[in-house]
Length: 123
Image (cartoon, rainbow, N blue to C red; front, side):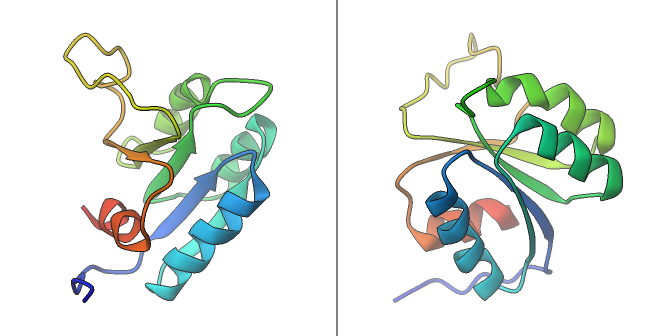
């Protein structure tokens, strides 16, 4: 039984260098009524945030050429209200000493369930 999530549709940016993750996350979030844009590179992220205002960004930590953390200033500059959710396959240290803690709004550990993803988008 899945929990009903009452939330307005959001415009979500998915950032990951794995096309299968982007496809899976897109399918899950579109099914919940959200609009989705995807990016596999830092350059694509910068291009998209120049043209659009996103409500939420799911940001992979490891993008190949750069760390997802390197994109946070660009994301914040485009929209200070954008919710940034770090997506990673690694367990993170969520202590107060974690430097990313102050600049992101949450974490999703891969693999995650569709319900976890939808809940993170709507919190």
